[in-house]
Picture 1 (cartoon, rainbow, N blue to C red):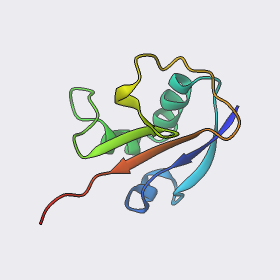
Picture 2 (tube, one colour; picture 1 turned 120 degrees about the horizontal axis):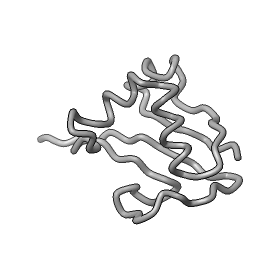
Picture 3 (tube, rainbow, N blue to C red; picture 1 turned 60 degrees about the vertical axis):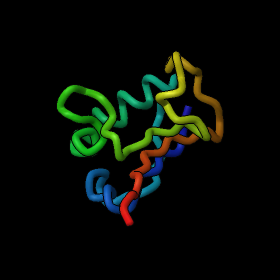
Picture 4 (cartoon, helix red, strand yellow; picture 1 turned 45 degrees about the vertical axis):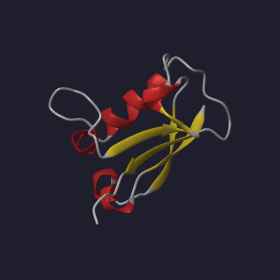
Length: 91
């Protein structure tokens, strides 16, 4: 199944200059694994040294934060999207 990947413009250098692009995978888990296998520099910006998603980053599948999902073996459907989002804070 082909899904759309979205990354913030600031991280597009990690994906060959593309902020949106297609990715082929059958499950959400496979899509996440393939995304970071294809773009290892992006993985370093998303995950910390212990393998956890950095506090200022969200991985979202459609409208759901991946942290909220118990199981990533979700079959992908036409129109599904996977986004990397950077949080902004400060004053």
